[in-house]
Image 1 (tube, one colour):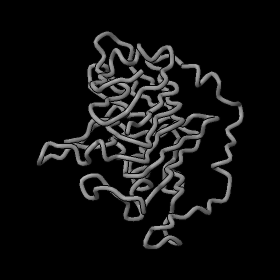
Image 2 (cartoon, helix red, strand yellow):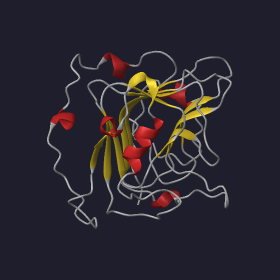
Image 3 (tube, helix red, strand yellow):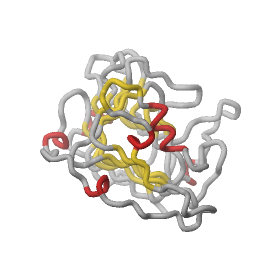
Image 4 (cartoon, helix red, strand yellow):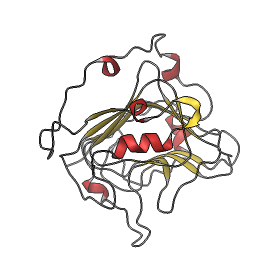
Length: 246
Protein backbone atom coordinates (compact mmCIF):
# COMPACT_ATOMS: atom_id res chain seq x y z
CA UNK A 1 0.00 0.00 0.00
CA UNK A 2 1.26 3.46 -0.84
CA UNK A 3 0.34 6.70 0.77
CA UNK A 4 -0.43 9.90 -1.05
CA UNK A 5 1.26 12.97 0.37
CA UNK A 6 -0.14 15.88 -1.60
CA UNK A 7 1.92 19.06 -1.64
CA UNK A 8 -0.80 21.26 -3.05
CA UNK A 9 1.28 24.40 -2.96
CA UNK A 10 4.93 24.13 -2.10
CA UNK A 11 6.32 27.54 -2.97
CA UNK A 12 9.40 29.11 -1.61
CA UNK A 13 12.14 31.58 -1.02
CA UNK A 14 11.44 35.09 0.12
CA UNK A 15 8.75 36.35 -2.25
CA UNK A 16 5.03 36.23 -1.47
CA UNK A 17 3.42 33.20 -3.10
CA UNK A 18 0.05 32.95 -4.81
CA UNK A 19 -1.49 31.35 -1.75
CA UNK A 20 -0.92 34.55 0.18
CA UNK A 21 -2.31 36.62 -2.67
CA UNK A 22 -5.53 34.59 -2.62
CA UNK A 23 -6.15 34.94 1.09
CA UNK A 24 -9.52 36.32 2.04
CA UNK A 25 -9.89 39.80 3.46
CA UNK A 26 -11.84 38.16 6.28
CA UNK A 27 -10.15 35.84 8.73
CA UNK A 28 -13.40 34.22 9.85
CA UNK A 29 -13.21 30.42 9.68
CA UNK A 30 -15.87 27.95 10.74
CA UNK A 31 -13.49 25.52 12.46
CA UNK A 32 -12.41 28.24 14.84
CA UNK A 33 -15.93 29.39 15.66
CA UNK A 34 -18.04 26.24 16.05
CA UNK A 35 -18.70 24.42 19.29
CA UNK A 36 -16.23 21.56 19.52
CA UNK A 37 -18.00 18.41 20.66
CA UNK A 38 -15.87 15.68 19.11
CA UNK A 39 -14.53 12.96 21.38
CA UNK A 40 -11.93 10.21 21.11
CA UNK A 41 -14.30 7.27 21.45
CA UNK A 42 -11.68 4.70 22.38
CA UNK A 43 -9.73 6.88 24.79
CA UNK A 44 -9.67 5.66 28.39
CA UNK A 45 -11.40 8.89 29.39
CA UNK A 46 -13.31 10.10 26.30
CA UNK A 47 -15.32 12.74 28.11
CA UNK A 48 -12.20 14.28 29.63
CA UNK A 49 -9.83 14.00 26.66
CA UNK A 50 -9.53 17.10 24.45
CA UNK A 51 -9.38 16.46 20.70
CA UNK A 52 -9.56 20.04 19.33
CA UNK A 53 -6.79 22.29 20.70
CA UNK A 54 -6.57 25.95 19.78
CA UNK A 55 -2.95 26.92 20.50
CA UNK A 56 -4.09 30.26 21.92
CA UNK A 57 -6.02 28.39 24.61
CA UNK A 58 -2.66 26.98 25.71
CA UNK A 59 -0.98 30.37 25.96
CA UNK A 60 0.34 31.00 22.44
CA UNK A 61 0.13 34.68 21.44
CA UNK A 62 0.78 34.69 17.71
CA UNK A 63 1.83 38.32 17.97
CA UNK A 64 5.14 38.04 16.11
CA UNK A 65 7.14 38.87 19.25
CA UNK A 66 6.39 36.28 21.93
CA UNK A 67 8.23 32.96 21.89
CA UNK A 68 5.33 30.53 21.49
CA UNK A 69 7.39 27.32 21.43
CA UNK A 70 6.39 26.01 24.86
CA UNK A 71 2.71 26.88 24.46
CA UNK A 72 2.44 25.12 21.09
CA UNK A 73 4.26 22.06 22.39
CA UNK A 74 1.92 21.92 25.38
CA UNK A 75 -1.06 22.01 23.03
CA UNK A 76 0.53 19.10 21.18
CA UNK A 77 1.42 16.95 24.17
CA UNK A 78 -1.29 17.44 26.80
CA UNK A 79 -3.55 14.51 27.58
CA UNK A 80 -0.92 11.76 27.80
CA UNK A 81 -0.54 11.56 24.02
CA UNK A 82 1.66 9.25 21.95
CA UNK A 83 5.13 10.84 21.89
CA UNK A 84 8.07 9.75 19.72
CA UNK A 85 10.50 7.50 21.54
CA UNK A 86 7.90 6.62 24.18
CA UNK A 87 4.87 5.25 22.35
CA UNK A 88 5.00 3.06 19.24
CA UNK A 89 1.53 3.93 17.86
CA UNK A 90 -2.05 4.55 18.92
CA UNK A 91 -5.52 5.45 17.67
CA UNK A 92 -6.84 6.49 21.09
CA UNK A 93 -5.26 9.96 21.43
CA UNK A 94 -6.00 11.89 18.21
CA UNK A 95 -5.68 15.66 18.20
CA UNK A 96 -6.35 18.66 15.99
CA UNK A 97 -3.85 21.41 16.78
CA UNK A 98 -5.44 24.58 15.42
CA UNK A 99 -3.62 27.86 14.70
CA UNK A 100 -5.65 31.06 14.30
CA UNK A 101 -4.25 33.83 12.10
CA UNK A 102 -1.03 35.32 13.47
CA UNK A 103 2.74 34.97 13.51
CA UNK A 104 3.99 32.34 15.95
CA UNK A 105 7.66 32.68 16.87
CA UNK A 106 9.47 29.47 17.79
CA UNK A 107 13.03 29.05 19.04
CA UNK A 108 13.11 25.24 18.96
CA UNK A 109 11.36 22.46 17.02
CA UNK A 110 7.71 21.63 17.54
CA UNK A 111 7.76 17.85 17.95
CA UNK A 112 4.80 16.26 16.21
CA UNK A 113 2.94 13.48 18.06
CA UNK A 114 1.20 10.43 16.67
CA UNK A 115 -2.24 10.87 15.05
CA UNK A 116 -2.08 14.68 14.86
CA UNK A 117 -3.59 17.16 12.43
CA UNK A 118 -1.89 20.58 12.51
CA UNK A 119 -4.34 22.98 10.85
CA UNK A 120 -4.05 26.72 10.25
CA UNK A 121 -6.75 29.22 9.30
CA UNK A 122 -6.95 28.92 5.47
CA UNK A 123 -8.43 32.40 5.06
CA UNK A 124 -5.49 34.10 6.82
CA UNK A 125 -2.60 31.65 6.83
CA UNK A 126 -0.81 31.63 10.20
CA UNK A 127 2.96 31.98 10.03
CA UNK A 128 5.25 29.68 11.97
CA UNK A 129 8.47 31.68 12.14
CA UNK A 130 11.86 30.53 13.39
CA UNK A 131 13.55 33.08 15.62
CA UNK A 132 17.10 34.20 14.89
CA UNK A 133 18.16 32.07 17.86
CA UNK A 134 16.38 28.93 16.62
CA UNK A 135 18.21 25.81 17.77
CA UNK A 136 17.53 22.11 17.39
CA UNK A 137 18.23 19.55 20.12
CA UNK A 138 20.30 16.45 19.34
CA UNK A 139 18.33 14.11 17.09
CA UNK A 140 16.00 16.83 15.81
CA UNK A 141 16.11 18.33 12.32
CA UNK A 142 13.34 20.83 11.65
CA UNK A 143 10.92 23.50 12.81
CA UNK A 144 8.17 20.87 12.71
CA UNK A 145 9.86 17.66 13.75
CA UNK A 146 7.95 14.63 12.53
CA UNK A 147 10.25 11.82 13.67
CA UNK A 148 13.28 12.64 15.86
CA UNK A 149 16.34 10.43 15.89
CA UNK A 150 17.33 8.62 19.07
CA UNK A 151 20.52 9.99 20.60
CA UNK A 152 21.39 6.49 21.82
CA UNK A 153 20.60 4.16 18.90
CA UNK A 154 20.87 6.69 16.10
CA UNK A 155 17.62 5.39 14.64
CA UNK A 156 14.41 7.31 14.17
CA UNK A 157 12.08 7.10 17.16
CA UNK A 158 9.30 5.76 14.92
CA UNK A 159 9.70 3.46 11.93
CA UNK A 160 8.66 5.82 9.15
CA UNK A 161 6.43 3.20 7.47
CA UNK A 162 4.46 2.99 10.73
CA UNK A 163 3.53 6.68 10.93
CA UNK A 164 -0.11 7.15 9.99
CA UNK A 165 -3.01 9.60 10.31
CA UNK A 166 -1.25 12.94 10.36
CA UNK A 167 -1.46 16.15 8.42
CA UNK A 168 -0.07 19.68 8.25
CA UNK A 169 -2.12 22.21 6.28
CA UNK A 170 -2.63 25.96 5.81
CA UNK A 171 0.64 27.50 7.02
CA UNK A 172 3.45 29.84 6.10
CA UNK A 173 6.77 28.38 7.27
CA UNK A 174 9.28 31.23 7.62
CA UNK A 175 13.03 30.73 8.15
CA UNK A 176 14.14 34.20 7.02
CA UNK A 177 15.20 35.40 10.49
CA UNK A 178 17.87 32.70 10.56
CA UNK A 179 21.20 33.48 8.87
CA UNK A 180 21.47 31.98 5.38
CA UNK A 181 24.70 30.28 6.43
CA UNK A 182 22.92 28.40 9.24
CA UNK A 183 21.26 25.11 8.33
CA UNK A 184 17.52 25.04 9.02
CA UNK A 185 14.66 22.88 7.72
CA UNK A 186 10.97 23.75 7.72
CA UNK A 187 9.42 20.28 8.04
CA UNK A 188 10.99 16.87 8.66
CA UNK A 189 8.45 14.50 7.10
CA UNK A 190 9.33 10.80 7.25
CA UNK A 191 5.92 9.22 7.05
CA UNK A 192 3.60 6.56 5.66
CA UNK A 193 -0.11 6.16 4.86
CA UNK A 194 -3.03 8.52 5.51
CA UNK A 195 -0.78 11.59 5.74
CA UNK A 196 -0.53 14.87 3.86
CA UNK A 197 1.10 18.28 3.56
CA UNK A 198 -1.31 20.80 2.04
CA UNK A 199 -1.49 24.51 1.35
CA UNK A 200 1.93 25.43 2.74
CA UNK A 201 4.08 28.41 1.77
CA UNK A 202 7.80 28.26 2.54
CA UNK A 203 9.57 31.60 3.01
CA UNK A 204 13.32 31.00 3.01
CA UNK A 205 16.55 32.86 2.42
CA UNK A 206 17.35 33.40 -1.26
CA UNK A 207 20.99 34.28 -0.59
CA UNK A 208 23.71 32.48 -2.49
CA UNK A 209 24.81 29.30 -0.71
CA UNK A 210 21.79 29.31 1.59
CA UNK A 211 21.53 26.37 3.97
CA UNK A 212 17.74 26.65 4.28
CA UNK A 213 15.48 23.88 3.01
CA UNK A 214 11.72 23.49 3.04
CA UNK A 215 11.01 19.80 3.51
CA UNK A 216 13.31 16.87 4.33
CA UNK A 217 11.94 13.40 3.56
CA UNK A 218 14.51 10.65 3.91
CA UNK A 219 12.30 7.59 4.26
CA UNK A 220 8.74 6.33 4.33
CA UNK A 221 6.19 5.47 1.64
CA UNK A 222 4.66 8.35 -0.22
CA UNK A 223 3.86 9.82 -3.62
CA UNK A 224 4.23 13.43 -4.70
CA UNK A 225 0.91 13.97 -6.42
CA UNK A 226 0.96 17.67 -7.20
CA UNK A 227 3.54 20.42 -6.90
CA UNK A 228 3.15 24.10 -7.50
CA UNK A 229 5.02 25.34 -10.57
CA UNK A 230 7.60 27.03 -8.33
CA UNK A 231 8.30 23.90 -6.32
CA UNK A 232 11.40 23.03 -8.32
CA UNK A 233 13.00 26.14 -6.86
CA UNK A 234 12.30 24.79 -3.39
CA UNK A 235 13.47 21.28 -4.24
CA UNK A 236 16.80 22.67 -5.39
CA UNK A 237 17.57 23.20 -1.71
CA UNK A 238 15.34 20.43 -0.41
CA UNK A 239 16.85 16.95 -0.37
CA UNK A 240 14.13 14.49 -1.27
CA UNK A 241 15.93 11.17 -1.16
CA UNK A 242 13.09 8.75 -1.64
CA UNK A 243 11.27 7.12 -4.53
CA UNK A 244 8.93 9.38 -6.47
CA UNK A 245 5.89 8.11 -8.37
CA UNK A 246 4.81 11.17 -10.34
